[in-house]
Amino acid sequence: MAWTSVLAIYLLFWVMTAFLILPFGIRTHDELGIEKTPGQADSAPANFRPRKLALAATILAAILTTLYVQNYIHGWITIDDVDFLSPHTVNSAD
Picture (cartoon, rainbow, N blue to C red):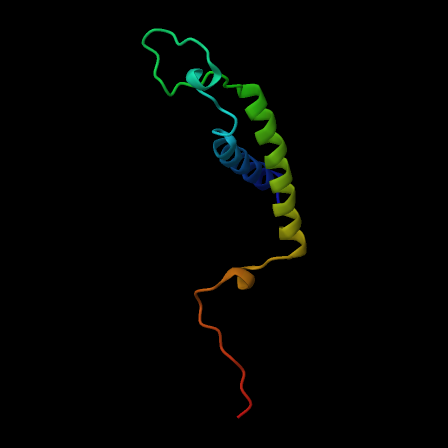
């Protein structure tokens, strides 16, 4: 597998994990007891930390990319293992 392919897979995993972990740990001003700015939406987060989110997404994406590449090299799970829609023939003794 080319390094550019691994980089593209890593970036896809990074974006996916960033969006998946985005809502975890976020609290509104009401939940934290902080006064809101006039005109602010009630659902606006009070404790959004983009650096912490980016670090977590980076670590998780690196782990997922490593597992993906290792599976590609060693073939632990193949398409035949997850293909549930194709009819499988059963060998019978006739």
